[in-house]
Image (cartoon, rainbow, N blue to C red; front, side, top):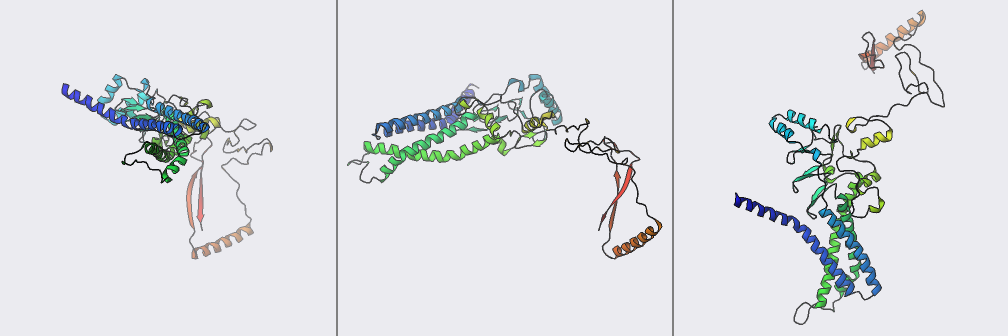
Length: 428
C-alpha cells in the first residue's frame, strides 16, 4: 500500500506539472516579448527619444492589462457550489439503497424542492452529479479535468489551467481582448523594422567565421516578435469574436451546443434578457469597472433571470411557477367586465372603447334562432329549383355532406346535455 500510494502521488504530481506547461509557455513567450520590444527595439534601435517614450508608454499599458487579466483568469476560482446543494448523509444513503429510477428521482425531487433551480435534464429529471453528490444549480456543470462542479461553466481552458466559469468569465473575455490589442500594437510598431531588416541585403548577420553577430541576434528578435504577434492576433480574433457573440446572447459555450432545459422544454434563448442586459450580466452595472479585470458580474452564480421572467415583468403579469410566462390580465371595460367577456350564452358584450362608447347587446338567447318563412307560391318555386339543382349535381361531382354533432359550450366550459346542435359542412 505504501509503494502504491507513493506511485499515485508521483503520477498526480506529473499530471499537475503537465497541466501547467501551457501556462508556463505563455508566460515565457510574454516575458521574452517584453525583453525583445523594450530592450532590443525601443532602447537599441529607436533613436528618437519622443518616439521611445510614446512606444514604451503605450506598450506598458497594453502589457499590464494583458498580463493582469491573464493572471486573474488563471488564479480566480471559477465558482464553488454552495453547501446547501450538497446532499446530506441520510439522503445519500436513501438514494443508494433505492434500486428503481423512479424512487431515486422522488428522493431528488424532494431534496430539490427548497432549492432555486429551473433547469432539468432532457428527460425532465433533476440534474444530479453522482461524483460530487450534489444537485446541480442552473447552468452549473461538472468539469472532469478539475474534478468538481462549477457555477455557470463555459469550458475548461488548458491555456489558463482553469475552468472558465461564473467567477472568471469576465477576466477571460478581457484577456482575449487585451491579448489582441497587445499583439496588434506590437505588430504595428515593429512592422517597419521587420521590412527594413528583411529587405536589407547588404547587412550580414554573420561574421567571417560564420558565427551570428550581435546585430544579427537583435534582428532575429525583431523578426520573431513580428511573426509571433501576427500569428497570435489572427488566432485569437475568431475566439474573441465568438465569446463577444455569446456575451450578447447571455449564453455559454456549453449552452450553445446543448441548450438549457426547463419544465417547458429546451430553450436556447432561455436566459436572453436583451443585448445590453446580457452584457451587464457579465460586466456589471459599474461602467468604470467594465474594462478592468476586477470582478463586477451580476448575481451569485446560482440564480439567473430568465427570458420568461423578463417578459412577464414587462407585461405586468404575476406569472406562473418555474418561469412559465402567463399572459397579462385582460383589460377591464367601463362596466368592470373584460373587453371581450362572454357573460352568458344569450348576451355578448362587445368591446367598449373610450371613443366609441358602449355597443348594443346581441339579440336572442344563443340557443334558438328565427327560421326563414316561405309562402305557398315561393315554396313551390323553391322546391322545383332544389330538385333541378340536385339532379345537376348528381351528374357532376358528388356533393359531400359531413354531418357533425356540434356541442354548445358555455362560457364557463360546461357542456349542457340538452344543448346540442346538428350542422353540416358541404364540399362542392
